[in-house]
Image 1 (cartoon, each protein chain N blue to C red):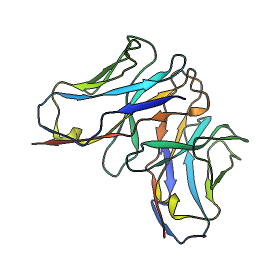
Image 2 (tube, rainbow over the protein chains, first blue to last red; image 1 turned 180 degrees about the vertical axis):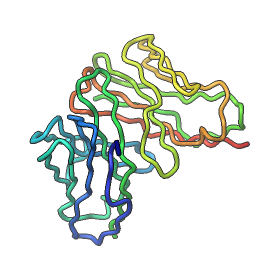
Image 3 (cartoon, one colour; image 1 turned 120 degrees about the vertical axis):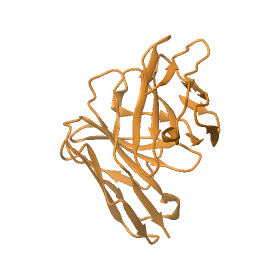
Length: 114
Length: 114
């Protein structure tokens, strides 16, 4: 199993550009989430999904879109990048049928918006 | 709302020293509690977890006890190694962990010197 994979590892954008951060998991997990990590703030939840076709907002959803057309993939879209979106982005997945439900994290994407 | 507070870092220790990283939480109901570790350049990995009051999670020599009376989940290790140098995150999930949502503390960086 590759676990949770994310691409790209690094990305530099100019303000106003759009891009998609890819996330895939091969563990047949129902739950998938996107977090951003900023210095001194821990990780904050952007969007999450409890299954294919179902998504919902987390703590900091503004400026980001998601969709979940398959169980395996959960891409995060930035429609018009802003410098405030400079961060490290982590995707996570979990089975969804256990309490507590252990989340498995990808290696992260470091995004810089100029 | 729910929240997690960790002691500020960085924490610098000598090899074989005793480690405590404090974590307190605010939550309604009965959350599950977690410690995640992030090694340099990597994603987060689950270190240990606890689901109810007085549960003790343990892994790799690390321990934490779920203390409902003090709303705490302090991380301890009796003798740290250089390889323990990492950032440690305390986190909670609401009862049932619906949606794969974790609430993180801000992280505590640990540096262990030989």
